[in-house]
Image (cartoon, rainbow over all chains, first blue to last red; front, side, top):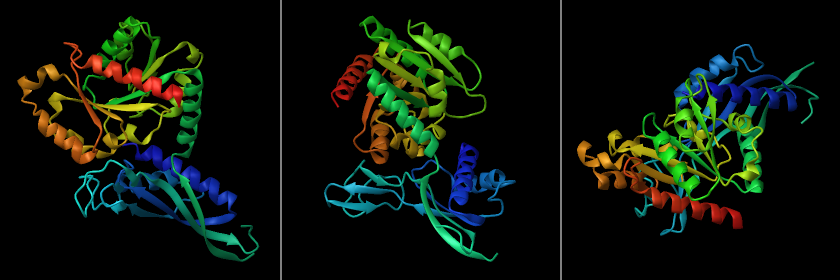
Length: 121
Length: 225
């Protein structure tokens, strides 16, 4: 369970960026979580509420976007999105591939909030 | 003053701090010419025993070797590793279930990296959390013991996906515990096609020569890069 430590870093990153972007009040955090990121969504949600308490992003919604694993299939010569991380095989032709192109993300993608009207961008 | 709603794009890795520090470490290791291996496994898979034997052999062949070892509470593993003759430092993580780049940076403070050929990082025994943390290593080896069952790789796809080498430990016990090598290989292939699987026994020495060979080749390749 390292989600609490990750949640703290997420909150810290959000607070820093909200400040930098001139957001007065943060209403939502958009986070992209890859299927191979090692993060369990439920655990992250639970930990986020704890980590956000008492900070500038307290009360902001956590909106999580799932990022599926994408492998490069050498037979199809194309990137293929997998329905699940295992098996790591092309869903079209069945060729195994360890060439992972996406799915390891753990990213603060965007912040939603309110800014002063003349707030700088 | 009126407030206006706004969405701003950030696109930053949540573990940015760790990643930046790991990048710095990697550059330091590269400049110093030391080859770094991060060992990850479940508790009890045999990281310490395998590493002790590996370091004993490397040191015997004249290579300069050191290790840092992460443990929740005790320094027993560091003591055991010292039996190999290598310099060893302990990282006591308390309740933290993995090593982070910052802990490694602190642990190697004062060490002359230029006087080392190999540095091993023995992670905290855990098959989940260490996956997310880059420690600046050249390669990551994930260890599974024969007593853990053949389907273990499929239960922990994230960690094995982050690894460069899979090692089966305690292979001398394979028959006694009914370990099916083929099923294990198939499980690994389903999760991480193409990764090398090495079978070793620290007790009998089986497979250690191959591991050594691989490390030397890895180090040589890293130096010409």
